[in-house]
Length: 525
Image (spheres, rainbow, N blue to C red):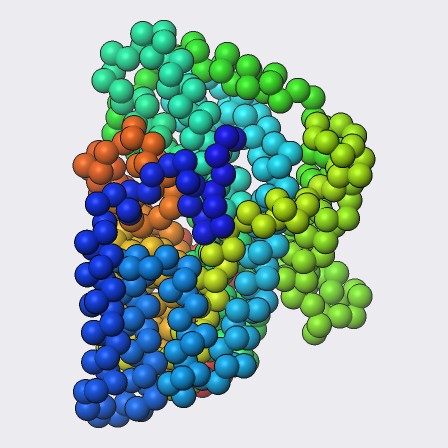
């Protein structure tokens, strides 16, 4: 790829839709955030609330406003708790700082390092192109193959990075169609192909814990608020996430191909894929070694803890080694990261340095999206403050009626609310703001926190209407091949379909897998 995302996850070569004519919004957001910060500090404390809770609320309102309006870079906003909480007496400096070195922050960084190694040695391109070649070259199958490749990569690599990878391949195919004069459909094929990348990247990210930041926000906040609860393992999440991807992806494909009336064969697609694969040449030693580290990492995550089965239990490697109480998924991520810095790339890596070059060097590692890690960490700090000051409990009491609804209706309400909210706000920021409140709401209503937190987490990744919801939508919009009205028109109906699909998956699959009941579990009391 010719252009790479910067350290905050933005690609400097693609104009961000958030920044087009947004200077006034940023200035207004800066002022509004400051005013909202001051109000809880000077107004009388509401009945039943803690004065410290109002200070935590002040910081939360400031961060939420600055996140939505991007008054300052969103990653910089995530650093506010490091200053504000100690000065306001909400959390001391040590308590606040521990969130920025949290296990799940380190796990996310490890995932970024692996993704960077994929990118350096073009393994992600080879994987995507091979899947596209495998699934065929009819116009409908091209869209399906792009969606499968994008979703698979998004389970392991940052969604925005995957969208940026797939974008030039899609542009080449669309250009080939235009060159062949096959544009009598009014550009519908190009629109469907571009939107399929954005949507499948978001859906694929829900498949694993590291696939999308809201998943990491959830597990970290859950661990902070309920330290006595059983740990949510990588494999346990996949039991819900992977079936969701398998079910939802074909539905989105059918919807897109029907909505844009895609049909017929496309003669130029196979030559584009063949030419790009040929340009990559045979698989290099470095690619094989990176693939080996990736497989080892996936194995380490999935099989770290014991896996109970109807006929017995598969012991995890941590149990076999007697270290189950000492290791975490972040241990696996950091071990794999060290391997990338240790293992030579081999003389066939195609870069200078020959066998002395490693699979990953620090100069390349510096370009991973560190800012995303700080956003997740800032969310953990906010959640800790909400819990410790009683703010989350007070807010939860105010909307405890939600947890008293029938389970199916409760899940439907949460999915609908969060999926629409994330259309106008960053999905990571939305998860950060609402998950602590939803956890407290469940407790106030005497329900399992999973019942509100899991559907909310998944819903935060299902933004289909506007560029502001997810980075993948922003990348596709910034390509200037999709307009906001086109995205909104197609995404609205898909959004409604998504609400039904997500509600069904959570109700039929997540509830039994996570042992959710309507009663409040002991670990939540």
